[in-house]
View (cartoon, rainbow, N blue to C red):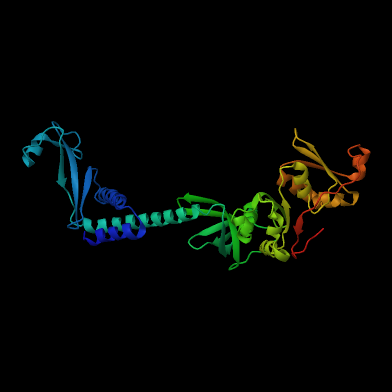
Length: 370
């Protein structure tokens, strides 16, 4: 075996980051396996690889015994002393058994080992690179589509966008560019497997972090996100500095910031509400764009009864209960909505009407909607 193999191993260590010792151990194991397979030998052997001379030798290892029971593993004391008088019982003697044409077999085995280890190393590099991108947004290009997945090229690897993570309002086409949220990165026998989503609430959160500098630098915090992808979402924000308007920061001048996100999500309506530790204020804000008369709080059951003007009941509940459902998910409070007339009849309110403030809601055209 020429020194070219050892030069190649040195190169792989420097360029691919493959540990040289691990590669040498794997190569030795492969050569032993190749020897036993091709020469039908059951003998215990060791491969001696000499980097300086570029040589390779197959050495048969046998234990010195009084009486030989397994000639593949043992050698008699008499025979051992014929080789070297110093040998004694229990010693291990090594005899060279390198076949004449073993170089060809060795070269093939070495090629397989190197190829496998390079592949494993490259997979490891890719996995380590993408494991750090879990719960982050990445840009990709759709490569192909089948009934189960949309396959998105992220550069060094192809990610899977499952059917359940695809937005019903979107049509996917090969070569389309797409922002995706990385939900899971797995290291499998087939290499890194990356799963992405277009429906995950984390996508909306990351889009706001990218678009709103005040969120990126921590001036404004995203406290909660509730999303029904492709249709409507709610996001609650908070600023510790009373001089900062968290909702206004997210909306941007003339709604430009939120409109960019709405466009990315193909017209998904977004309600931006201010978080509050007071459940009365928070639940009222969360039911945007509906106006709220009052919020009755049951701390024990973490439940609220929300009273709205008669003409706001359907808006507060939303189509198919969506607005109330998202508000409950956003706040973590149960929400029971009643109109003002029914609430008065039930004796829930006796005082004059007071309407709590509403928050900002944007539709697919970037306009405030009621």
